[in-house]
Length: 148
Length: 148
DNA sequence: GTCAATTGAATTGCGCGCAATTTAATTGAT
DNA sequence: ATCAATTAAATTGCGCGCAATTCAATTGAC
Image (tube, rainbow over all chains, first blue to last red; front, side):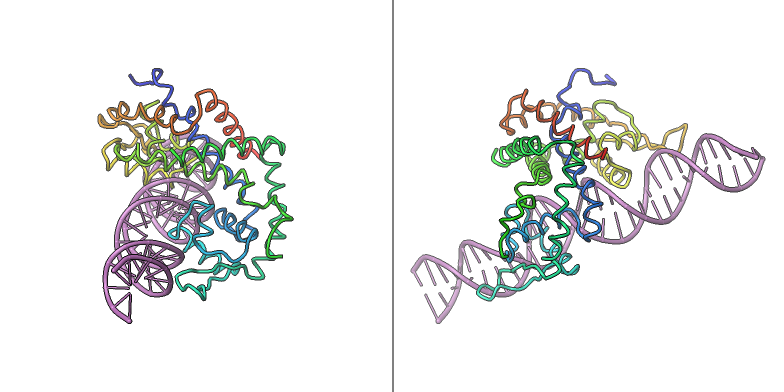
């Protein structure tokens, strides 16, 4: 049995997990040329999205929607601080909490980033309705996986 | 402007890239309890899928469908070798090429893995037709991103 | 008020993933 | 036959992501 005609359920290209996995990497690669000029990595960009939505959040507040913990976020946030986009200051009322706020440079960056979603849409080969529909299905799948 | 009611195109939860990104991580996490008993990580499992389909491949042959290069695969394959699932031997006709073959343990592992796809299907909350349809759309998106 | 339990971040260790470089083997033009 | 170009892996350096542990601050039971 050198080959594998009997078990198509194990073929890589049949696995939706791999389709999602490789498409996620394709996204990161496609974002790269847009993010490099902003001195952001893709995960850093996701954090900036959250801060542009709502400035002044704690590490765990940022981590919740991203499904990330301090083990990932602390070094990432230190790099964003080193780049000059955020401040990290201890909460006055609770010294355990680290408050993440945007610097002026971090706020200004939003204007440079605002065109990225539209540029990415072009690269996806889909129209807005298709993106919304597919996004809905993919999110639902992610929720199911986390639940079960 | 503390909040962000004007730029919904930058909201994290509207980004299909993030939906795909986080669902990919949810997949890896959902696979973990099934793969831990096999002493496989999720990326290692993907490599094993390819070897179960076709034994005796080179590093670059394995890398092509996975979109991975030797920088990622070489250490991963060394770990699979250390676990005892694969052999790494230089090609006799071309010493540059590393031939990856399954050990007996690696071949035997297939029988333990064969139930995983069905178990995962349950966790996805979808029927087979939905998985096929969604997988097709996601793969198409990945292809478009790599092309543009 | 004191001390145990909890909470929020930080740290450590390991594996994945990418880019850039290096090394060795092979090919091909001359 | 020789040497430059190409090819396949390996290596190095860096950032992400997860699990487990540690540390400090806070809360709560008594």
